[in-house]
Length: 66
Image: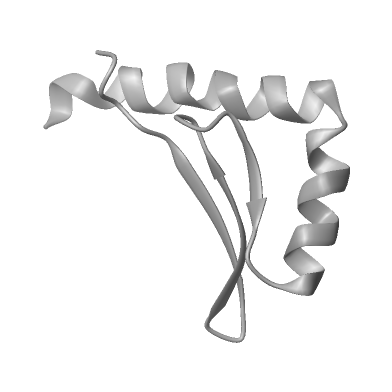
């Protein structure tokens, strides 16, 4: 179960500007706007904890479906 990965990507105009990856454990920005927001989101412990909890709630809940 350690190899399960939760990825939450944000797009604007078909361009990915930020992503949360459960393996990295933080947001990563890909544009100027995304980097700025990723820094802000990474400073908020409740935001990071909520995204990490999504791996447990969404991914592990659906393991049996695949």
